[in-house]
Image 1 (tube, rainbow, N blue to C red):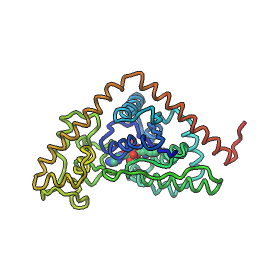
Image 2 (image 1 turned 30 degrees about the vertical axis):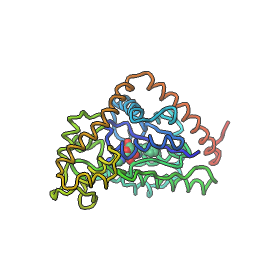
Image 3 (image 1 turned 90 degrees about the vertical axis):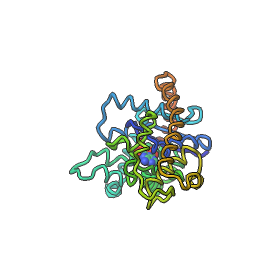
Image 4 (image 1 turned 30 degrees about the horizontal axis):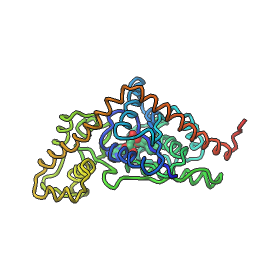
Length: 327
Ligand code: TYM
């Protein structure tokens, strides 16, 4: 049986980029293979967090997982820090990696830009991510394309370990969506949509109100030629809106282009507001039911047990290979 693994950081503002690039794939895959999904709280502490907010955001993401359609009967859903093997394997991978390869990571370079010294956790972030994936023998990692380089590194680490110690890890593959693997910021379509951008209108969060969604879409940056055509290079703003439209409506991009032939950007934006709000209403309704329920904690506890069972087996294999005693 094939298995997929992925995770989302509990940093608040989960947006439609996270949904399109990652969460939507998570839901589709649970009908095709075993699926393990984590809320990666240890990754989020690579930058300062308010402890109270971190706890809340962790449960927020768990509730969002369920609201977008993850089914705990089909998927293992758990919080990373409740399974100690993640940090343990990350250390072992640290001892089998090189500062050179970590220095080349684009995410690290971006986050440490113009700083004299960066947090060590930001530097070793991809090793913890590799540990997450390798612990579960995952063949597939559904993520947005900003994470592609981290998956490449995970593959290198797995292959290196297997060559040195004999077959131990499954070498995983990046799994991206055809449309929307990189949703761009609404205010600047040359940058990816992000949780931390200062301008709240640069993104649509899954918990935004209908009027906030309307404002963000209506003021989205486009171009001046008023032709509705998918062309990421020359028309990044309109192409981004078309990708979002396509994912939320289920129509393919060609169909949408035909539907809006001869129409102006205003019409497309107005309809997009409706298409997005229709989907968000359903997600939010479920979210508010689940978020405060005891069921949520019960699902996470169950997930921890299942994740622990799988990861402990991997750790026995790994420790034996590298010569750590088992008493
Ligand atoms: P995070 O929380 O930053 O992002 C969660 C997921 O959302 C995707 N994503 C996007 N997809 C399309 N367009 C965007 N603008 C956009 N922004 C974010 C990300 O690619 C990601 O799939 N490092 C991971 C978390 C992680 C992980 C793992 C993932 C930790 N361990 C193991 C997979 C496997 C991250 O960036 O999370």
